[in-house]
Length: 117
Picture (tube, rainbow, N blue to C red):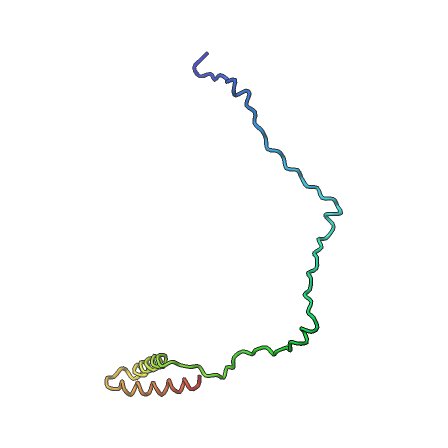
């Protein structure tokens, strides 16, 4: 015998491997498969006539009127005036000495727009 031959061991011959069991198939009969599934109806809440009569129906609340004026805080007004004054000065070419006039013109413009809101 050469060094490369393999000998079968006695333990290898006695080992057995178990196969997993096959799952049993569920067979439906034609009657069960064809029958539609039926849901049970839900129980309705009963309202007694006394309770229904004692509570008058109220009209639903309507959304807030759009005619209400928006409130502008002093900080918001200041920012609006500053922005408007900047654009007025830009149109004028940023010439020095007219910043107070630009600010007053911007206040008039912003106040007119706030009144429209």
